[in-house]
Length: 187
Image 1: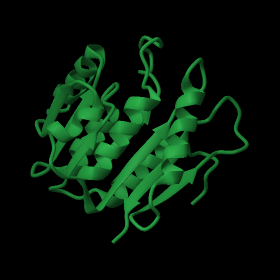
Image 2 (image 1 turned 180 degrees about the vertical axis):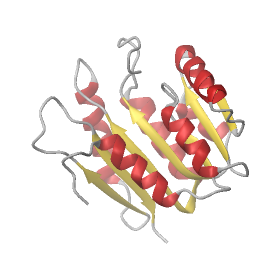
Image 3 (image 1 turned 60 degrees about the horizontal axis):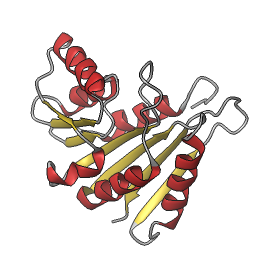
Image 4 (image 1 turned 90 degrees about the vertical axis):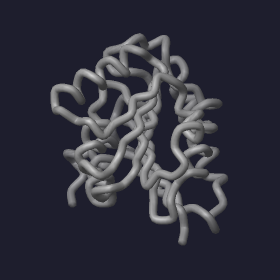
């Protein structure tokens, strides 16, 4: 595999495609424009289910439109914070996050480290034995660095006996390239 044509999102999608199976229950913790939700819906197939969260109605509307265009019916969209995912889902095989703000949306609305860390912890609580949590960490701007640093500090502190955390960075790329992280539950 070469990396010159990759980015955090492409790495996340490759991991999803390699590990999500038909019939799985998965969560798109940050629905955004719905692209990850659509991919997850296709990967879990008709017998699987996707729960997608977002705090912005615009994001839920965009995701609804994309799913309708592709006739996807195996998704439950939830307008609300991803930190409340345990109120809606008991177990999930994969939980996918994109931290930052809605592309093309209001940049004054963005994820915050406090709720993001609570959401990561909620994801770990409902993660199945063979599951994973995928994180694309978009940073920069006025608040992104603080959230990035808080998330990385939290990931570093996770119990290594329970979880394995892998972090990938495009270290020599300019303009705050997003980071990609995977958390797996140790067996």
